[in-house]
Length: 128
Image (cartoon, rainbow, N blue to C red):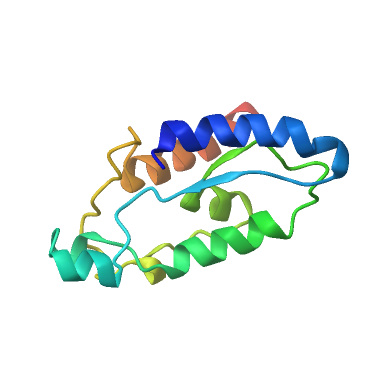
């Protein structure tokens, strides 16, 4: 299913099942994820990918949230982890320090996301 179709399903099912306390959310990777499928079709250099553990860690956070409060969301793996205090994303990189291949459905790279969060933190401190 394409991401647009998945988005429509998330919105529809989240509304449909909300009264039952059933959450429906989407989880997208920010970067390419190195999997056996990617390796088999050789779609690139593994150093530009993250490990699949970033998706499982992000999914765990989503699945342990209150289903009555957290539904109908479109989550990006590193954003959901960042919101829970994760700051070291090198542990998820196949080759820490190498540039990452951004998912073509997202506009913001992993590096740009972390730089934006750092700027927001500085901005909050300067406003205090």
